[in-house]
Amino acid sequence: MMLMSTRGLTRQFAGLHAVEDVDFDLPQGQVRALIGPNGAGKTTFVGMLCGRIAPTSGTVVFDGQDISRLAAHKRINLGMAYTFQITSVFANLSVAENVALAARRRRHGGAVQDAVVRALQQVGLQDRLAQNAGDLSYGHQRLLEIAMGLAQHPRLLILDEPTQGLTDSEIAAFKALVRGLADTTTILLIEHNMSVVMETADVITVLNSGRVLAEGSPQAIHADPAVQRAYLGTGG
Ligand SMILES: Nc1ncnc2c1ncn2[C@@H]1O[C@H](COP(=O)(O)OP(=O)(O)OP(=O)(O)O)[C@@H](O)[C@H]1O
Image (cartoon, rainbow, N blue to C red; front, side, top):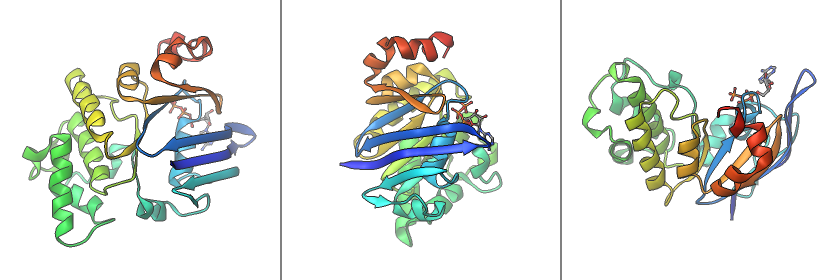
């Protein structure tokens, strides 16, 4: 079953086609990576999935429902969670309080605390739950963001450049985290780090100049000459 699909999804900015006519299908249970050179349209595309950016034309369907015009918060209620930047973390609240705020978007009562504990365990921050979020290292703040997404028990978790700024050991832990989540959560990962993409994704979609350039297994994408020309060959 397709958890999320787009048809003809397009966004123009003053005549520039940031995303152009994208047909995209994400089956339930898959880890999908979205890659492409700078300016390829990744952020714009995901912004339209989440409801942060309105499409110029085309449709977005989530779990069989046309959500093309649904407000972002209502998409969260349907089971989409996304982490963008650390700006969503409240520095003066504890780690646990931050995760509880996120959990309350979809749960109530005792279920909130259960979700907090579980999400912090999943990302390995369970020993830091009382610490102020602002005192965490950068890498731990990124993990906290992921915990905030997981605490919503999403059906689709969208991670935008989750390993940017992480240390090598944090990146290794992140790869293990994604592999562990893959059984229960559909994941869409926007990622520049090719080792993360190659080791975690079931399928990779490559965007270039707003269009889908290629889609396939990590091996197939790695071997695709058009992808190498557009992206892999340019130091990505
Ligand atoms: N609000 C905007 N107004 C005008 N142009 C925009 C706007 N947002 C994005 N663009 C343009 O749309 C194109 C796609 O940008 P987008 O940020 O989606 O690419 P990206 O693949 O996410 O890039 P990066 O990897 O650098 O984040 C770029 O040419 C960008 O300059």
